[in-house]
Image (cartoon, rainbow over all chains, first blue to last red; front, side, top):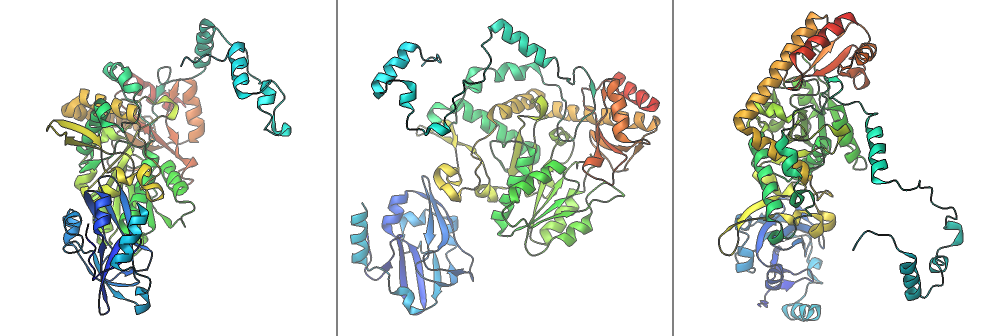
Length: 128
Length: 447
């Protein structure tokens, strides 16, 4: 189970990589492992907007469906269409190839309550 | 557990175990003012012989299509049901089957549904079908909700030539969702949906347009032309079919640009049965399968590579997705669907074409005879096994008189369309003999 230190995390099991004003968002290694084989993903359109704590998409595995909750508010600048055609990438490389969307962050305060890798790891230990 | 009511001894044991001295004592938690003190008003039991006699007597008060010459259609059609249908659906494996959640225990049920889905795809020219819905009306309503989910738009345009009760059902489904419903008038000159009213009714928020083919008046619609208009504006086209036998002759909805094909499969293997249970069908394109309501059975292989069937795309359904499910309908009309499958399999492709041809020629003959008897065809467009005629006198009165001659002459349309106050919707199927049709025409003449 990997938790890269350079990322931020949420309690809904999304990760965020912040580069300037742009946040790249995906789901964590723990999330993909809990879901099992991912068969389908639904993402918002490019140019759409996402709201912090609100669903921005859906990920479906052979046994469950989960909403994807946005860690930040802002407008969607890029969508990873490649994973729509090959959702199995979410199981194979959740922090790399299987990033989901890029968002232009509405304001820096959006990032205040995100968890560090250590905090997130501790959180899922308690969850189990 | 046998279904035998408790003996005094049983009751004594139960009360003892519950620590109560009497039934009243056991129920003492219920406030006295809420409890009925009267004995239940249920008549005494009957012996099997008495009960059969009683049911026969009740049954004899019904008038059926066996006692009358019926020319009724309007969404329910009198077709012959081959003996093989009842014989096979009476197998207890089928009629006592439970929801096939456990594929290892339900291969037979699952395969039967899969075969039904295959037949519906072949009939409609679509990619995927669900395991069936309640009836034609709810299938249309579910399709409308599905179109909303797919497009993210709210507006619904219904052709006024769509079955009035289908339209009412859509209205019921949409009540509480802000409605966004409009109706597009049909042409008084042709009895078909007016392309320009459809075009004008569609705006940037229109999710779908629903047309019936053949429409409620029996008329063949130009679905291809309507599809073009609808798609140009980014909406979906839903084609409803209330007489599925027509698919034996007409081009399937999938070949004419329908995005969702829905309707009523009662015509195959299911009796008129006083209005139900009927059999709704729904089929669509592969790309929309995740938004389809209801059950879907898929074909796969087990770990040894052997063919197997299972419920698939189940994550759309409420036992997994709760409030985000595509629909609160998660069941299907399994036995009715099986009856339809058996009937269709018995007919085969050639048989279905012949059956449809027979329906068409009977209806055309009836049309000719009614015109000779003084009725007037309401419109001149092609029809399948149902059509609308104008009569010279009050239709209610005409039909009443025909009824005295043991002829159920059709449906007066004034109830649904006030402007069509001289119009009767008439249907003929393979069940109407030439003699019957001739008698209908001659009685109409004398009315």
